[in-house]
Length: 155
Image 1 (cartoon, rainbow, N blue to C red):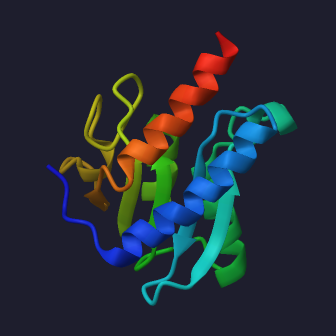
Image 2 (image 1 turned 45 degrees about the vertical axis):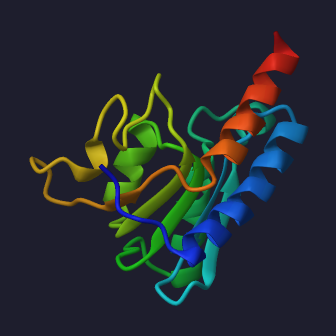
Image 3 (image 1 turned 90 degrees about the vertical axis):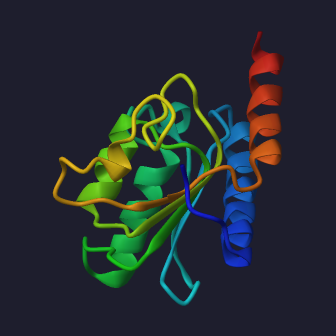
């Protein structure tokens, strides 16, 4: 179960969708992410760049977290929201918790590798010392269509 989305959440996922389209145009899986402060100011953004940079950790979420931490001058992103077009994977969920992000908002569910409620629920795992609020399914149809189109073109 996820929390309800706000109008601001839909706008943040919209910005992440723009980044996802850029990633897809460069041959990477079309995933985009933004980190916003509590007032909605975007602190960092990223798009998948694994193919572009040959870096297996260059997921949109990780790049957005790095940019936000750099902008704030701190690794601690408590009070921030990370919005992403696809449910975070295990690696990204771990990075999100390490950064102390308070909220995660995402578009499409990932029933193969998701770690925010579908396959795993790392972000809300009560056994861990840090957790994040999760809002899933925001602009899910748009996010899923973008991914489906990308993979259909490659098969």
